[in-house]
Length: 419
Ligand code: GAL
Image (cartoon, rainbow, N blue to C red; front, side, top):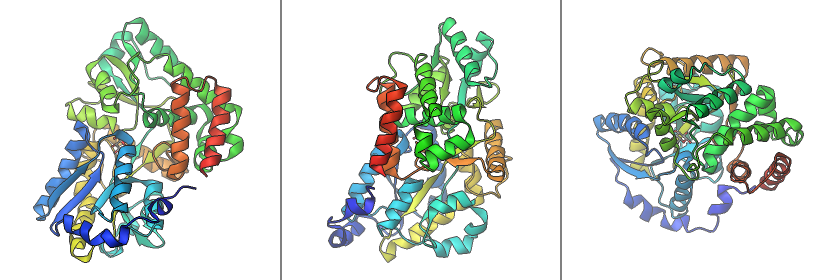
C-alpha cells in the first residue's frame, strides 16, 4: 500500500517546520481546499464570515479541481516542506493516512468541550478520530447517488421519476428524441467513478456495493454483476454529448440548470450550484435518488483535517473547529452547500425539499445499516485503491478498455496491486 507516511519519508519535514510556521500568522486560518465553484465558494463564505466575527483572518489556499485530486497533490507538497496549513479539506481515508504519518494535530479538548462524541455520527468518527484523538472536524455529509433534473425539460418530454435503470434509459431516449442532450457528464476520472458508484449500487444492490467497494471482496469485484454494471455504464455513455471529455463538474451542472441537458448524475454538491443560481427544487429542478437506490446512501463527508501546527497557531485551529461544528453553522453552511449536517441534532427547518430528503435518508440508512462509504469519494478504501478504481473506470469510459469483461479483469488487478 502506498501511504502518505512513505511519501513523506526522507523529506525535509522536521528541519523546515519552523520556516513553514512563520508563513502563517497566529490570528489567521490558513485553509487548503478545492471549493472553487460558485456554490462551493458561497458555502465557504459562511465560514469565513463566522471566523471573522471571532477575529480570525482567512488565508485562502484554493486548488481547483473537483473531487480534490489536485488539492491533495498540493497538500502533500506543503506537508513534505513542513509548511502545514491550519487545516485542509480532506476525505475519509486520506485523513487516516496523514494521521498515521504523524502529522495531524489534536482537537480532542475542543471536541470534549463541544460534545462531538455524542453529536457526530459513528461512521464519521471512524475517519475523524485516530487512536482515540480527534484529528479532523467533519463539515458535512454528502451523498453521491442522486439524479439532478431540469424540470422544464422533464415537463416538455413528459418524463416521470425513473424507478429502475431501464426507466432511466427510456427517459434519456425521450430527451434525445426531443433534441436535448440527455446526460450531462464531465469526462474526468473522479466524476465518472462517482457516477459508477451509483451504477454499481443500482445494478447489484446495497449488500453487493458494500462487499465490492468497501470490503474489496474479490469474488464480487470480478462477478457477472460487476460486469453488468460496466455494461450499464457503457449504456449511459451513449447519451453524453461529444464535448464531455475533461469538462468540469459544475459546467455539467450548468448545462442542466440552463436546460441544455436533462440530467446529471452527481453528488449533492451539484445542488449547491442550483441554489447559487437561485433555482428551487420542485419548481426549477428535481432531485431523485439514482434509480433503484432509494433507501441506501452512498456518502462522503468533507473534513477539515487539522495539522500539528506550532502552539501559537492552535487557538486559530480550535476556533475553526468550534465554528465548523456549531449547530448554526451546520445549518447555514449545508443549506448553501447541498450537503446535510455532520451532527445528528441539527433541525431540518432551513433546508429545501432535497435537503430534507437528504437528512431523512441519512437517518434511515444509518438505522437500517444501508449507509456505505463512496469508493470514488475517499470513503470506500484508502487513496491508492480509490485511485486505481478511478483509473479503470475512466479508461473504460474513454475506450482504452474496450469491453466489460476486460474492465472487470483490469479492476481486480488494479485494486490488488494497490492494496
Ligand atoms: C467532493 C467534495 C464536495 C465537492 C465536490 C466537487 O469531493 O466532497 O464538497 O466539493 O468534491 O468539488
